[in-house]
Image (cartoon, rainbow, N blue to C red; front, side, top):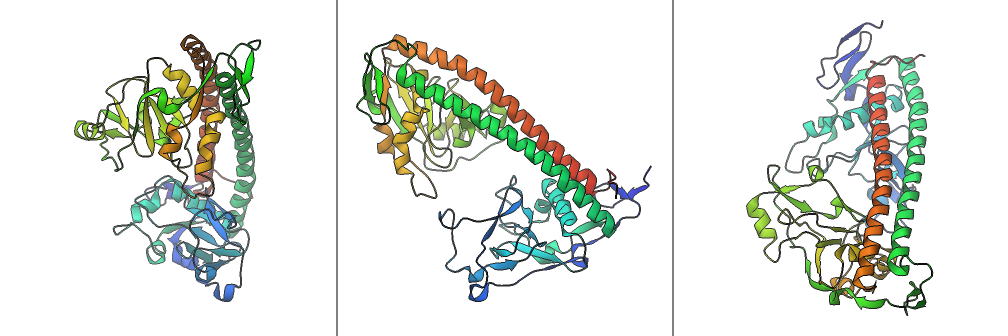
Length: 429
């Protein structure tokens, strides 16, 4: 059995006896190479722990006045995004450069100076990242780290042949895990697309394939059952309320819950365990226009997840977060049917015109209140809503299984990397 020793690093524990521990500056130096006269045009970005080519043609995100301020980086450099540590504790903040290019100088770029294997140390810093080590090092109001602070970070140093073996092993194993995860994601997206198709078909065609049809007069909807009517959203609701335009004061001990766009999916709401909480006073402040009652509809109108609608499951428990709206249906309409229709492709197409070309998508309130919905008689609304409740619950159960599998694969990958870069799992040379 391999002989181990205490690393002296709280978040690492034991390491192989022959490994060394030295500060980062003993192996790496900061790379600063401005893109003067635009010598390099391959713009890179850090995304989900990978350094990828950035598509600047779509103008997504902020662009600098000149790419001369960017840093030229080379294959084998490691990039660390160590800004605004107080605001985002979920993103992956490190990545290995695999192709020469330029990246914002707001990030720290490091290059090795002792011919060590950068790929090994990229995996090691990834582990530090997932263990949230950088957040313990941040300082100042914005909690940014500079190279001077980063340079003192202790690194584990196996022999160079072992660095190479570990990196090669992890490259192969992580590629297999990533491939499996991508297949699961593709399968999940197909299920989600089927769910959306099922919803759209039911709320625009009904459940009876033999019913007489008529032209809806709406090009993207086509024919609807002869007994259905077109009606704008504002005429089938008691009221429509936009969210308070102020950030809630969250309280981890609160007993009330905030519904944000991040808490919604197609016809579903996150469990309370995953939602942000409020105190009674803050709840009263945010419900001063109207409380959320059971069967009210919540609709997200801003951000990447705009267009999702869900039902409030109980009264006197929830309030509006930012970027969402509250609808309360008139008695002549079934809230669940209207909620399902708001999630349909037929309604999505009516809102998308407001979001085209925007880096921060939002749908205008006037557009939303004038959404055209296709409405059957109340008893048929109830049948369609019950049908979609049952069908979508089955699909959601399958989606939950795939999400659980993705979580397990991600956790296994994280654990595998940790065990290998700390020497707790021995990798054959």
